[in-house]
Length: 504
Image (cartoon, rainbow, N blue to C red):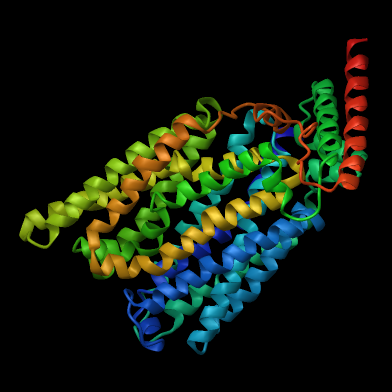
């Protein structure tokens, strides 16, 4: 089956990423529905709208952290299915809401589910991917996030054509979430568990079968066996220091470094301002003088552009150009686009006639340019890099922490304050993101981040200077440390024995 099966598995698992995009984007159009605003007695720039989006992001924080526990106990596949079920319940609550409390609880549950899915889907894809195509395989997650945004806005745009008194304009877009939830719940039953997780729970024979199904091309039996042996050796070595709980991520120096990298890449993606633009694009266009049906149409077109560029990038470029170069380009180019957007925004209020139309058109251009740049840099790479640098022993917990704190917690803050800031300081808000990108993101990526392109997950362990052996933290108890040192010695002997066999 090989690459075709691997891509099919990745695309289907990324239905969870589709839900991420759909749930994130659906409120952009819903909050413009006159019936919705009247029903809940609010307006797009109000704190209530900020709370609806913030509860979604807040729920995602806890969902991500919970996913770290279920990834290790239930596995990758069942965690994705659990996220789909929680999302289904949230979708039912939102679409049938009779009061604001039902909307908020439904959004919390949707966010909870998306938190689970946003950290589990890339890990599942990464552990199943061939190192030469891992950028493509994990990049599909970002592609499906974009597709989710597209579907959400066009479903919302189509639903807006009903009379203003008809609640269909907002209930149907919210109810539409149920379809991908059911698809994911049922379909994941037919796909295998990650081979690395199977090795971790001592189902090695099954893991080898899955590896062949994922990577066999008709003549690479030896490579598959070598990969399988490398996975087993790494797991044996990491077991030597695995400790219960979350503390070990911060006490083992190399793991702490890798956790920092994963958390920072998620944080940097948020600090581009992408979700502020995604959630509140209708407000941004209103500030540019674009209102009414034209506003909704431009918003819907905006969400199409990014996924097109993302698709071209992950298919043709990501596994060739690597991770660092696109991130450096993205940081600089996004900052330039936001500066241009701010300058244009400052000129809108005093402009009239054709000059105002020209400024509005240029403003739309730079927002679209922002989407394109993000889609060939932070969009796909934030998920690829964060998922591939985590060691197996803490991959679930580490990814949960990185996604929950670096992505969703920061996103929660911006979701709450952005509609107020956009209403009060308008274009000046962009400079917050520009300053962070140029003063923090750019130097960190340039000097600190590592290039992981084309390396196996086990080779990435060595890139960060550890294979778990000899990395036992000093502050573990003496008795526990003695036991762990014995395990380390056993792992070393196995590694030495394998090397001798390889020489013969």
